[in-house]
Amino acid sequence: MNSCVLFAEVIEAPELRYTQDNQMAVATMVVQFQGVRSEEPPMSLRAVGWGGLGQKMHAECHVGDRLILEGRLKMDTIDRAEGFKEKRAELVVSRFYAVEGNVVDHVAHPSSVESAPKVPVAPPPEDLNLDEVPF
Image (cartoon, rainbow, N blue to C red; front, side, top):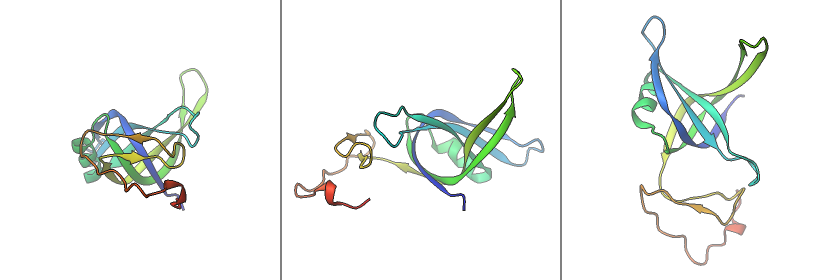
């Protein structure tokens, strides 16, 4: 089964276009996500939404938004003008959710908190030990 859930930030605004028969909307945007280890640089990936979902992505997603994307990974082989083939991955989105407020990254940085100015979130209880929470 090819299923992927990705927490990412929009780094290139969605671009909306239509198929040749002008019937189906297609939105593409570039998102960035952190690697598993803190020393890894962020990675980027093209995310694609089709039909009504593509129109919704175009209307609701903006640069800097943090999203949870659900979908499937797809690999394409592209013939380059330089004479070689390049493989490129993209995420075909089936659902997306906006993430607002504070986000704690428990895997790479257990004590780091990123803040977003959209919605204030109450701090966790003082007696909460994040090292004991299973993830």
